[in-house]
Length: 253
Image (cartoon, rainbow, N blue to C red):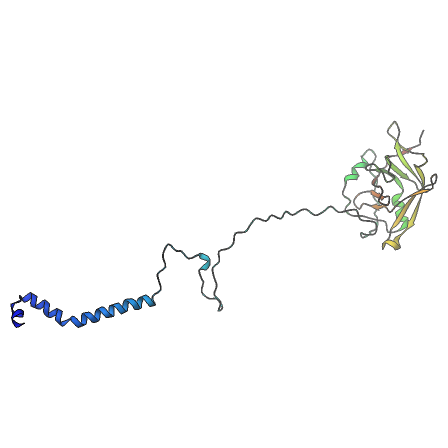
């Protein structure tokens, strides 16, 4: 062995000496490295792939008040499919259902104007008389019907109610003037009946008596608040609106 060592060149002998002196440390270093590698694999979490992105809704904010707050993507609002419809048209209310206010004295349409224009004017509620005398003052006059059939179920142009207790249907003669009809069913007497007790407020019934046939047409008139217009309801059989006119009624020929 001495001879073999001595026969080696100096560089070769230095290398062999270094390897012999470091045999144990190298083995230990390898073992430590293996343990370090395996230990780091068990402790360190696996790296997340860049291609596998975490959804935004799963990202957590710092805890607020002891609870974990998550960032949620706001949901997209869908367009509403609900179509709002305008409110339903107000139906005619029977007398006594609305608040009754004292009637105001309204002037008649001036001569030469078209009284039927008041047929399309909004009523803005009712202004029914507070007393029977006021009711009589309101109904007495010359009235043109807004449309046919009339309150009587016929095709006359209006009705005249006079202060002496008489009523008559109105027609037009060949000259276009208003005339009172004298037919058996076209005239008679009228009477007012106080029915306030049954309606919870000042309410008055108007009876159109037809003596020839012994019949009576009954109505509880209501009056528009914003215009001189009277609504007659023949117990649900025929209804009609009437507007006041200053036009004179001429005697029938």
